[in-house]
Length: 138
Image 1: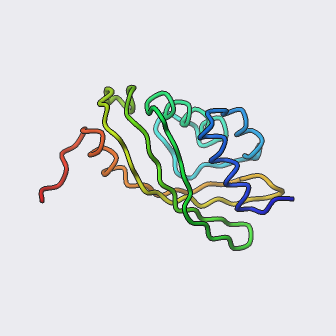
Image 2: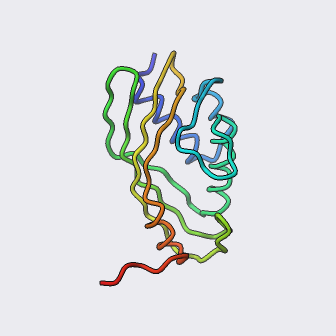
């Protein structure tokens, strides 16, 4: 059986491939999302909705984990999220701008499936990259 780190890697592979049906194989039926996204329920279906929207809004959308830390049933990943803004996202019309955003994911794995997720991302930086907010001076 694969380790907990590999389970999280499988989630990124499903997201990057656009085959969101594979998410059902990685997230448990009782999955809980603690990093809620407006308009998406904090469930497995909500995760699929979020990444469906992201893949429509950002051409070449990718999540690349560059570092993992695993302790017991918890896995933390440092992730680089990239893409090109080609469709509306959160009410922001397509800008053609590239996004390149560092984020951290922490998941709890039970019986080979992810059952909880917490995340930290710099939404301000993303909004600046999309042109929705001015970049800081200097």
